[in-house]
Amino acid sequence: MKKEMVIVKFGGSLITDKSSDKPKINRLHLEAIGKILNQKNYDLIVVHGAGSFGHPIAKKFGIATGLDGSHGQEKAIKETREQVQELNNILCNYMNAEGISTASIAPSSTMTTNGPKEIIDFPFELFDRALKENKIPVTFGDVTQDEKQGISILSGDILMMELTKYYEPLYSIFVMDHPGVYDGDPNNPDSKIKSIINIETIKNLNSNQKGADVTGGLVGKIECAVEMANYSETWITNLDLLKGFFDKKPLGSKVVL
Image 1 (tube, one colour):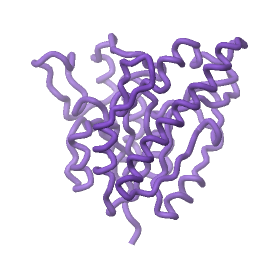
Image 2: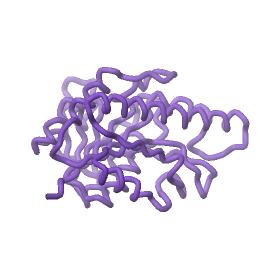
Image 3: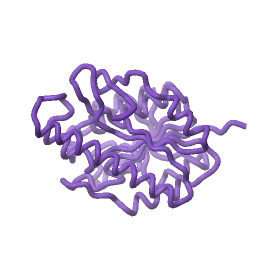
Image 4: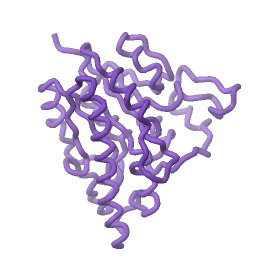
């Protein structure tokens, strides 16, 4: 019998120290991810963000806005791609250490974009092949060749959206630092997790988000998640609650239309 599928995206701030201006992993979270994903009941696809392995340098050299012809930016593009691939390798290694077979799929070498929100000819066959070989495809936010602006940053959220539309999984899960989306400042003890969120939630979000995020932050994530809710049960949660999804006991903020 064909297994149901779960697609999980680990935020860059979860698996790295996103406040760092140099690449720095969160070892404890990476170890926990390997243990949680070591299950046999579901087909899995994993997406992850770049965190401190991509955002600081991408922001400094304006990579999100396209090629500017400078030697400094050209060097930064190469360095960003190498760093996010390194992070992908690290995550895969933590998963491999738990006996999980992985297949890394790097957007910079397999995908072209037409602006940051459109992927031209998404290589679903690479994901299908990995799944057929009982491997977990692991892809990530990356710097892609772009038809409109020379280069672009393809976020993990856009990858999640395209994968969810194609595979229509049981769950599509954004795993972040917090156990869902708060109705106020997450640092305020009076703020509570919203059990249900939709496009209206964006209007009430605090626009003063911390950290150097060049891919849209929480607002962009919710916009993608609302679209994904047409195809899959879509959630925003944290690492502590992730295991419950594999027992069909989801907790966090559910995204609805």
